[in-house]
Every structure is written in structure tokens, then in C-alpha cells.
Length: 334
Image (cartoon, rainbow, N blue to C red):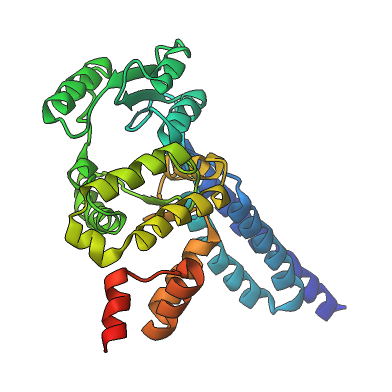
């Protein structure tokens, strides 16, 4: 009887310690969000973490020695607490965002979506009388400001900066950090953004890269546009280059663009929601992808031997039928 009483007392003490740790965990989460401007985000990651934590608590209690289970449960609370904090999202009310390229595509959709969430949106358009600008002006909101700006015109950028600062009551500088690399390739822009992310940490500026994948926006699939680009390319090539590459090679480039365009993602929604996730995250990731295939291609490129990766990426995905005319003639003469 005495042994049974001791066991019951031990179980009661252990149960009390489990309850204390659970209560401390809940209090820590509550205090953090009470002090922070971020909000609790019950997304899939957070839900799974909490379910595993409390399912593990039951397993520890019933199947492990009491004090070992208590220690393990306490240790498990720390990564779950960090996960909850990292997945927290910021409240959009009272925050402003400046978006370039709002005439069409991602920019236009983002401007409307972020406005609907409560942001003060400054939508930059190249054509103030264009369809995109007129569509945004129809919103008729004091939280959506449409401004004409050419990002290659430094004087216009300075003027926009003054307008935005005035509307925000001079609450801060408007960062235009990426414009210096706007004309560079995607790879150069990504590298630039990675370094900028590290350099701007000291200023409290967070930078995230969004990799949208193959999404149909703007002129993708526009036959007339690509016909014009094709004609412009041929007209501007020197006779020597045109002879080296051959018209078949150039025609194939145009045809491939028109062929793959309809296979792109037809809706920008997934990309827009990914951007919003990064924008509202209290601790955004350095890089977000919207398609699993992007990660697969990166793995192929970085981890496979170059010969294998080149074969997969160039022969399977691109599969050119016509090599440049000069290259064919060079091989034939050898």
C-alpha cells in the first residue's frame, strides 16, 4: 500500500510538472505576442508543431520515466516556441508599401491585393493614362496612391521619394536599393539582393528574394509582341551575326517562346500570396520559391556532375533542333 501511494504521489507530481511546463509555454507565447506588433499565425507549420508537441507530451508521460519525460518535453518546447515566433505575421494596418511596375502583371495584382489587406499602397506606373493606372484609380481610396515613375529617371525617383515622404509624414526614407541592378540579369539581381540583405541588416531592413517560376504575365503568349521582337532582332543583327546564327536558329527561338508560353502558370495568385507571406513575416526567409520544380532544377544543377546536369537542362528542357548555322558549318568542315 505504501509503494502504491508513493507511485500515485510521483505520478501526481509529474503530472503537475507537465502542466506547469505547458502553462509556462502558453504564457511565454502570450507575453511575446502581447509585447510584439506581430500576430499569431496558425498556419500548417505551426499547427503541425503544436500537435506533435502535445502528442509527444502524452507519449512522454505514459511511456518514459517521469523525470526523463519532463526534461524531454521541456526541451521540445523551445524549438516549437521559436517556430511560432518565426511564423508570426505583422499587422498590415498603418504600414506602407511602394510597388514598381503596377501597369500590368504582378505589380498590378499586388497593388490591389495589398490594399485590400489594409496597406497604404504607392503604386508606381510608367504610363499614368494606361489601363493599369486607370484600373487602380477606380479603387478611389486614400490608401492607394498611383504615381507615374520611370525607374531609369533619377529625377523622377527623387520627386517620388519626396511625395511619398510627404504623405507618410516623413516617417522614414523610401528604399530604392534594387534599382541599381534592375537592368542586370536575374542571376545578377539575385546575387546583388543576397549581398544587400546582409549589408542592410545593420539598418533593420529585411530583404527577401521571390522566385516566381514560370508565370504568364505581361507579353508572355502575345504573338504580335513576339513577332515584333523577332523582326527587331533580325533587323538589328549585323549581317555577319545573322550569317553565323542563321535564320532557322533565330526562328526557333521565337517559336519556342510562343510554344512554352501557354504552359506557364496562368494565374499570378500563388506568386502574389508568396510575396504577401514574405512581406508580413516578422522574420522573413532569405528566399521564397513558388514552384517545387525550381528547387529540383537547382538540385540538378548544383549536385549532379556538370555533364549530366547539362544534358538534362539543355537537351531535355530546351532540346534545340537547330544549332547555329556557323557551328554546323564548322563541324562539317572538320
